[in-house]
Amino acid sequence: MEHAGSIKLTTFLTEKQIQEKVRSIGAALSDRFRGKDVVAVCVLKGSFMFYADLIREMDIDIACEFCGLSSYHGGLRSTGEVRLTLDLNSPVRDRHVILIEDIVDTGLTMNFLKAHVEARKPKSITTAALLLKPHALKVECPLDHVGFEIPNDFVVGYGLDYQGYYRNLPYVAQIQSIN
Ligand code: IMP
Image (cartoon, rainbow, N blue to C red; front, side, top):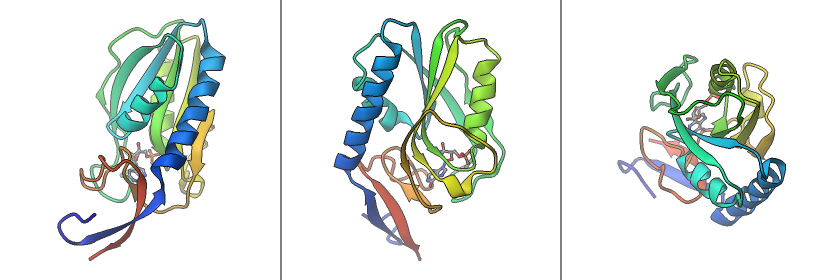
């Protein structure tokens, strides 16, 4: 697939690999939270696809919430500045919160979100990220569930974008070249 005739992509994780991983994280979360008051938070925009697949693998009652955070502004590198663009709509006090992220790169976004939610006194916070770039971390960012650890290269697809494009790919791809 090409955008503006200039970008080449190579598949990095197939749909099948992703779905298997999503299934196992969904099963683990279901076991852990069965019978509890759970709020699953989708971190927009990048997590929408992972989130939609993951919550469908969870056979327990969950409340769905959405928040928006922005740090990349469409480029290849993080600005290091995290902004809240959409806040949660329901109280999370004394509830179990699961934060569902597409990718943890520097760790700044996840830490910002954790602190933001922590201030609202939830009963617990659990983190799940489909992708982690361990070598890109700039801050400590312990995660409860990680789908795949990946190299420090820019990836797109399965919710992740480059300049707003490629989110709709059902797989994860690396950008091979930008001419
Ligand atoms: P962090 O704050 O540096 O951990 O970055 C988190 C956010 O940056 C993610 O939620 C993504 O939106 C974006 N991001 C980080 N790495 C990539 C990438 O390789 N492709 C697309 N977006 C990325």
